[in-house]
Image (cartoon, rainbow, N blue to C red; front, side, top):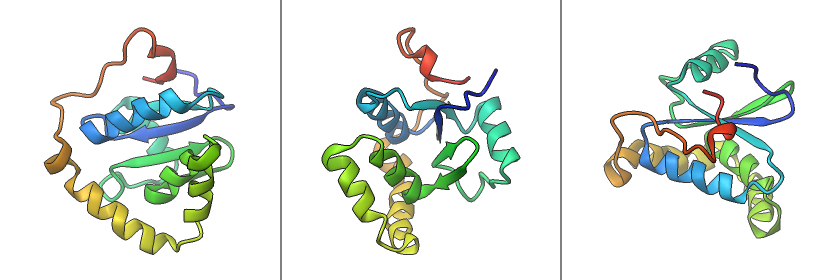
Length: 138
């Protein structure tokens, strides 16, 4: 599969109910069609993390890849995604980035550690509907 160089790629835990809900929420708000998605468990997800030297044993929730530029993980990824939406959400994403990443990630890690217990887990990765298929890389 060709990886688009003009789209930001969100890698997510494909079996996590919270992560899947978040992806659907991002798709709904992505009016500029800025994002494409792949699960961390997919071949393309594994390829992209390997190319960037990302250890998915340590980072197993959300990764935002800005092709040709950088990648962001955990709370920074979530806030960079929020910035794309503009309005109040974009403003809050920008403001919260001023909080040190170590502080933001403490909260993020607490939620990520408990996400399966609180929101549940699927047996297999989400299969996108035909209407959303073009948004997914795998």
